[in-house]
Image 1: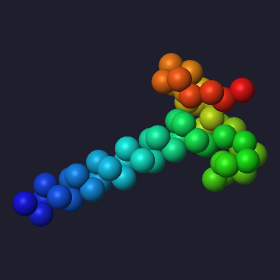
Image 2: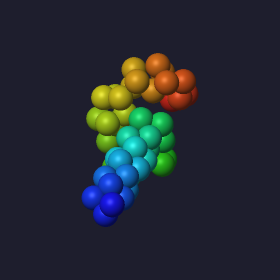
Image 3: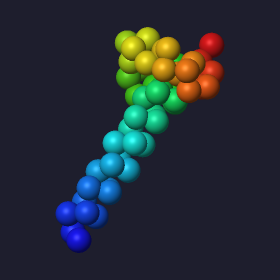
Image 4: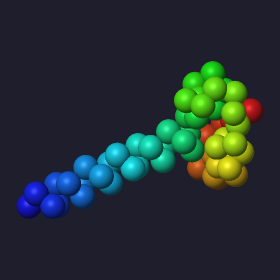
Length: 54
């Protein structure tokens, strides 16, 4: 049961990180300052999923 709980926690963490990098990381809220490499890498996915970015 502990392995299942650990897997669920890891899945939740990875999902939240993915949501942040695709949906939130841009401009003033970026963890990486003015570096836009991550934003440009996930740019098409942002539009496909309905997140506005410009």
